[in-house]
Image (cartoon, rainbow, N blue to C red; front, side, top):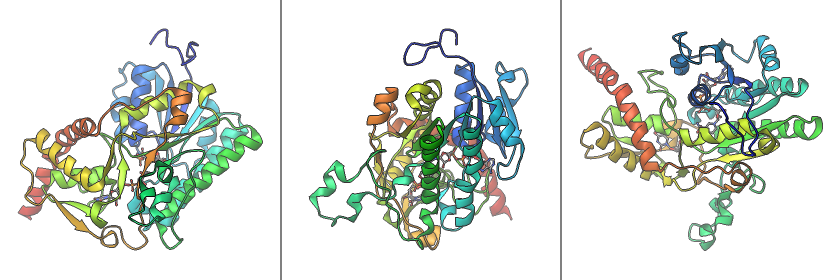
Length: 386
Ligand SMILES: NC(=O)c1ccc[n+]([C@@H]2O[C@H](COP(=O)([O-])OP(=O)(O)OC[C@H]3O[C@@H](n4cnc5c(N)ncnc54)[C@H](O)[C@@H]3O)[C@@H](O)[C@H]2O)c1
Ligand SMILES: O=c1ccn([C@@H]2O[C@H](COP(=O)(O)OP(=O)(O)O[C@H]3OC[C@@H](O)[C@H](O)[C@H]3O)[C@@H](O)[C@H]2O)c(=O)[nH]1
């Protein structure tokens, strides 16, 4: 760790980071990176620490004095301001961020993504502390191209679909499509942070993740999460593969996504943490434009990769179609296509993703198989015995 320098060749000084939502998917990978590769200290705030237990125990771990867990619900805990004051930088990851919740629990979604984030912004601004806030690629909503006729040649023109931080509009559906409650709440908190920067000098960076995936994402229903719960697509498809049931394609699986390996994305976040002069005042897309697939293609690729890593044959009927109403309920809607423009992050942080979709699925599904296959087998044999 000695002799670490930033992108401008200046030595990096150890800092204290208040990380809110540190016990989640992204937080767990960020904590791991900070502990193993940097001298920084983390005040890890979350309601749960299951995903970072391996970093907290035993007390003999090399970094034991650099990470502290605080079980705090930021909705109602007066200790939050003290922790933000103690830190040099606050990173806010806390949110409800699974699409199945957006249309079924819109109030919780809006409170979590807007109201609960307000005190964090306020404490940072009032105490002159830097903030890295996690927003989302959903902020772009639908592409302009989605409104063109299906056979329009303009649909092939990147001007109609590539998503640029400083140029693309935010296009959401009508209010009754409650899917957009999340994107809209994230948009308003972005605008508030931006305004705090403009009017009160808050030093901020906003991150817009584009479908980061990897180990520890969400939960496997009935194993380490509620049996009726619906996680994001990686965990849904992993669950289907582990149980040898067909993968469900919502509305034909035609939507497109670009997936990025969590470890590539974490490299970008570390650059933001350690290069404040280059990151402050910016909004960054963080994704992998080279890894675009339709959800159907993702299902096909995951089926192949899982068969390779588990040694099990694929099902004769690997996928089935399901309507969004049946799968998510009333008020669901979808983003059609998400390709991040990379100009700003390339220019400011000289960062690029590295891992192909096949490779990232191979390491992630190896983890899923190793972690869950046995537990699923036991749960399934128990339920057939009953
Ligand atoms: N993973 C992605 O691809 C992705 C994409 C776009 C945006 N994001 C954003 O990144 C952030 C982190 O996402 P993630 O994938 O790690 O999700 P996650 O659900 O795994 O992590 C969120 C964490 O925040 C915690 N949390 C929520 N409310 C809290 C509260 N009131 N008090 C304390 N802790 C609370 C949860 O317990 C959880 O551990 C979110 O803001 C999300 O909107 C993620
Ligand atoms: O079993 C499933 C699950 C999901 N899907 C589809 O797969 C696509 C991706 O779904 P995900 O659950 O990963 O979530 P989305 O990409 O739509 O949204 C995510 O985007 C970025 C973040 O802000 C959030 O983590 C989440 O809103 C959607 O089109 C969804 O309808 C299926 O076809 N089958």
